[in-house]
Amino acid sequence: MKYCDFNGCRNKLERGRYCEEHKRDKPKQPSKIKYDTSNKPFYNSGIWKATRKKVYERERGCCQRCGRFVFGKLAQVHHIVKVKNNPTLKLEESNLRLLCPECHMIEEHSEENKKVFANYFMPPSQK
Picture (cartoon, rainbow, N blue to C red):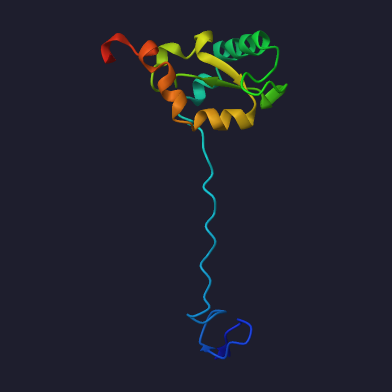
C-alpha cells in the first residue's frame, strides 16, 4: 500500500498513483482531421497531375482564398464539388481552386461551400 500522489492527500492505494478523489481523467486527444483517401489512385494518375499543374499555373501559385504564394506540396488543389458527390467534375478546371493548407482545411470542413454550386453541378438525375 502507498499514499496518493496528490499533494497533501493521506488516502491509501493498492495500485495506481492517485486515489478515486484525485484520479485525473486522461486528456482527450484532439481528433485529427483526415482527408478522404478513397480516390488515392486518381490523385496519383498522370491526368490529375497535369490538371493540377494547369490550375497552379492559372493561379500563378497564389492561394485563391488568402492570396499567399504556395509552392510544391503546400499548393493544394481543392474540388468545389467533391469527387464523391459528382465524379464527372473531377477534372473540370472550373471546379478546382488552388489553396494553401490552412485555407484548404477551412474549405474542406465548411458547410457553406457545399451548397454554393450544388444545384448547378448536380447531374440531371438528382435535380
